[in-house]
Amino acid sequence: MPKRLNNNLFASLRQKLRRETPPAERLLWSRLRRKQLNGYKFRRQYGIEEYVVDFYCSEACLVVEIDGPTHFNDVAEQQDPVRQQRIEKLGITVLRFTNDEVYRNMEGVLTKILERLDAPASSSGAS
Image (tube, rainbow, N blue to C red; front, side, top):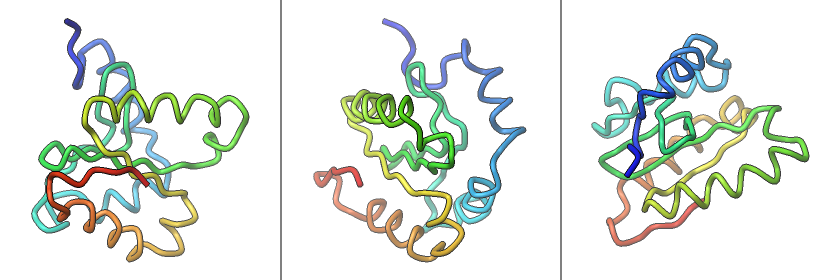
C-alpha cells in the first residue's frame, strides 16, 4: 500500500510550494503556526496521497485550503471537488476559504477553523 501522508516522492514539490507561498497563505500561516490556535499544530504544504494541501492538522484530521486565482478556472473547478472527495474519503475534513476571505475577514476564517477544531470528533463535515 502506498504511503498516504507526506510521501517522499513529493518532497521537492512541497519545498517549492513553501518557498513560493502566496501572500494570503503566508498571512494565514502567521496565525496558525506555533500552535497559536488553541494549541493545535498545523503543518503547511503537507502531502496527502498525491496532493499537497495548504495546511493540515493531524490531531483534528483537518485540511485548510486557501483558494487563489488558480482555483477559479474551468480545469480547477472540475478537479478541486474530485481532490476534496478523495481526501475526505480518508476521514479528513476540508475547509476552503478564498484569498479575499483571508484578507478581509481573518477573524471570521479563524473562527470557522476553531469551530471545526473544537467540534466533537463524531461531527465531520466540509465547508
